[in-house]
Length: 232
Image (tube, rainbow, N blue to C red):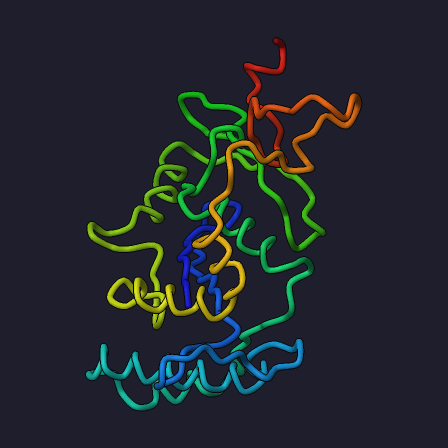
C-alpha cells in the first residue's frame, strides 16, 4: 500500500491521520498477479477492520510503554474505535489525483491568510461540521506559530511510505511483473511497434478544417493556465 501522513486540521490544530491506498490484488508466491474477489465492494469488512486496527494499535502501545498499568490499556477497549471505509465517488484515477495535490503541501497555504498585524493572524477555514461553510479565525501571533510548528516533522521522518510490493526494495521487479500481466497486449505493442513520428493521432487533427495538425502549446490541470498567461 501507499500511506500519506497528514497532521493538520483546517484551523491548524493537531489532527494526525493517514490516507492509504490499497491495491486491488497482489502477487502470489509463484510471481503471478491475483485480483481480489471483492465484487466491487471494499477489500476489508469495515466492522472487522475497526476491531483489528484497535487491537494492533494497542498492542503497539504496550511495546512502546511497557511501564503503563494494564488498566490503562483496558480502558482503550471500552470505547468503540471507528475506521470508516467506503467506495470513492469517482474512479481510482480521481482518488490518486486528489491525494497527489496534498502530498507535499504544508499546513496552510498563503492564499488562506487574510490579514497579519503585530498582534494577530487571520485566515480562512472550512467548517466541515457545518457542510464545509467557509469561515475566518483570528489567532494571536504566538498561537499561530505554535500551531504551525506542530506540523513540522522530526528530521528524517518520512511523510510518504510504500509497503509490500511497492516498497523500494522490491518495486522494480514487482512493478515490471504487474505491468506485464495486467496489460500484456499493450506491452507487446509498445515493444514491437514503436510509434512513428509521421503518424497523426485522431485527437491531434484540427476539428474545424480536418486537415491541419494541432500542436501542444501548454498543458494544465482543472485549475486552468497560470494567471500570468491569462492576460496574454
